[in-house]
Length: 417
View 1 (spheres, helix red, strand yellow):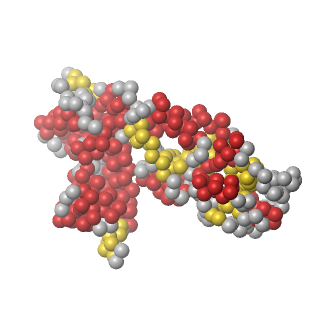
View 2 (tube, rainbow, N blue to C red):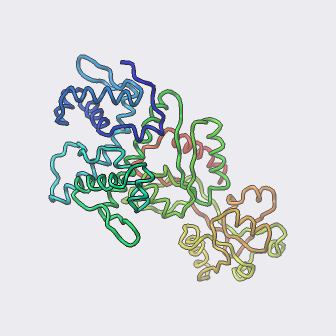
């Protein structure tokens, strides 16, 4: 066959049929159209037609037709691996619903039910989660409000549970809806990676890498890594997310970001997260060159640095917890902040223009430290060491673009120690 030209990655998420993806996966798993036909309760002609249409959508031949069956091509294998993750998320939700409804799991054979096999419907659900208003979701998707209502009814009927409840604040997700949202986000994010997996086989690393960027990496290692990536892989776009740590972990679990880079904490593996240590850095008191305390040439007391006004990380942040614990060990209940911020531009301006003191690592203001404009201030409490690294989903399968950025960050880590 001569497949049509491949569609662009941005178009794929709406044009790819999840029903066809499931047929493709069944043929790839069983090795034949006949076996897939039995598995899916579809006519062999319907299975063959789905494969032909799916290959046209992807823009590549996905199987070698042999006398003994269907053998996936290299592109077919790549699509199958990523597609299995898409279908797996949806199948697990379907099994979870079945378990809640009947207290036992029927023999689903891993087949995703039809109500979950409509990409547009799933995208609409996510838009409704975001807007919490049917009219707003309808406008964002370019459809009518009755179409939104119909889609929700289809999803709720299939799941057997209400996904939304009405309130004065708009539509709110039920407990079932929250579980569904997590699964759908993961499935759609996996689906978006399929064209990039195919492009990588052709020697082209493309796609979007979403990074949860915590303050310790925003001024040095992350910008350096992005700069190097842009030189070697011009088809990759990097998007950074600077929200608080807990928010980033939630986005990581849903697959909306690829990894979190920054200070790492002891994460509970039961929530599906793992960490990778890149380096350790010291947090210390930093002041402008010529600061009155810097001229003393001796370790400063906590009371002395407190008197000049402290710039500290925000309450409940990882860095603030470490700082407070560090000073408690040295007989101080807690430091009192004059300013609480994670904005490095604010920190830098206050340090250079005032006598205030910031407690953070030199990597935060690396260029100013190198130029001698900002210096470290010895204190009786000493420096505090913390770990910097990646936080990943334990079951993540990184895209080629994400792997490229991860590799560069790892190569730069020794210079930050």
